[in-house]
Image (cartoon, rainbow, N blue to C red; front, top):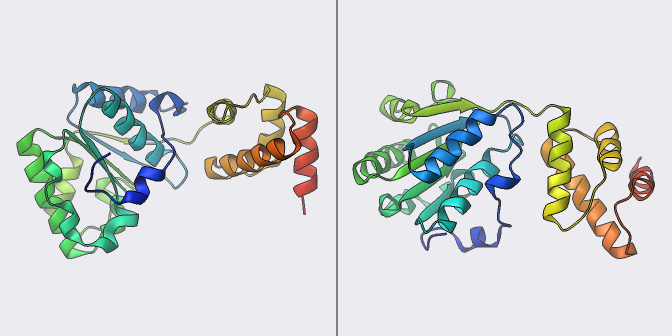
Length: 232
C-alpha cells in the first residue's frame, strides 16, 4: 500500500469492506465508508481480539486505494520493533490506518512519535483511522496529550456478532474463497466449533483444504464427517 511499510504486509490477502460483517455494528461500517469518502477525518475503533478491527482497517485502506487515494496501514503490534523512525513522512499519505495502538502504550519514544505524527497528519489533512484493544481512556498511555488526540473524532467499541452475524461471516468467508457453504452446513459448524471469528475462520480454512484434497463440496455431510474426524 505504501513503500514505507514492511514488504510482508503486501502478502496479506486483501480484506474488503464488503466482506466485513457489521451485525450490530452498522454505525461503524457507515463511519468507515464516510472516512473513505472523505466526509470524516478520524475514526477510532476498539474491541477484543478477533472482533474484526484489523479487517475493518484493511477494508478501509482497500476501498480508499481502489478510489485512487494514497493509503498506509501500520500494524503497531508487528512494526514497533522496527523503530519509531518508521513514522517519518507518513503524514504525506491521504489516509493512514494505525492498528493495535495498545502495542506501544508505555513506550515513551513511540508514544511521542505517534503524537507528533498525529499533529503533522492533522495539519496535512490526512484522514486517520485507529484501532486498539480498548478505547483511548482505557489505554495505559503515559502521554496524556496522545490520549486526548486519539479521543478526537468518531469513536466506537465493536460489539460481538450474534449468531445470524456469525453465520453471515462463515458464508461470506466461504464465498471469498470461491466456495459455497449452505446454511445447514454453516449452522453445523457454528454449533460444534469455537464461536470466535478467528476460530471460525481457521475451521473454514481446514475444511477448504480437505475439500480441495478430496475434490468435494462443502456439503453438510462432508462438513459433518470432517469435524467428527477432527474431534478429540
